[in-house]
Image (cartoon, rainbow, N blue to C red; front, side, top):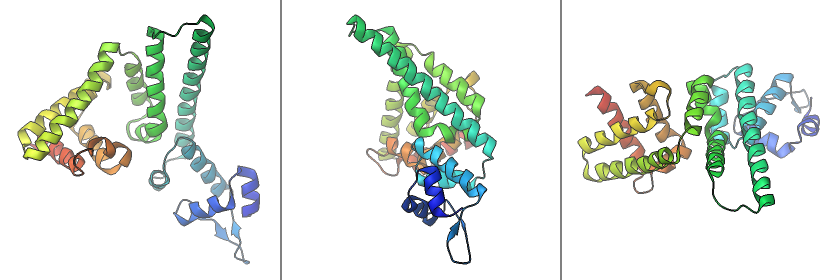
Length: 245
């Protein structure tokens, strides 16, 4: 299949296809006339890339995912799960807001809080759903999401305040080069994670793996670099030292 046929089938422009090829996402073969020839495998890859882009996964991260050689069944199952959750969230939100407008009810209610959590979860799925499922598995993330949805307003406030406190402690420890204070941030971060994780089972390996992600993924990293660009690496090294002490 040539590039014109692919653009007609997928709705993509030839410029987009060439760009994806230039950054290493596609590698179609070439015919004798040097025209690109897209195979069925190339088309499958194009549709997979499209599904990830619809979830706002950046091209750099897509390249990492493709390099990891995730099997198609896992990729499609993950994508379907994310899309289904997004659809359910939007349907519930539309129904609820329509009902409030019809009744002239503009006050915040318990139902509003539940939908707010759904929206927060939806945003998290859009930004990180693919990666976290591949890293921790479908069932683990499903249970963690349910724990998030079961939070009370008090619980929700605690998790937000605790995350801010973790960053504040880390910033002070970084500025003062205070490892013992940084260890307090690691312990508090573990408690914060355990609030979501099944059976409160945050292993040292999983904890260190997450802090690695805070260094490597810009979407996580930006949460820790408001004052100090080296804070994510400091957090990672402190977490490693905490478990090796």
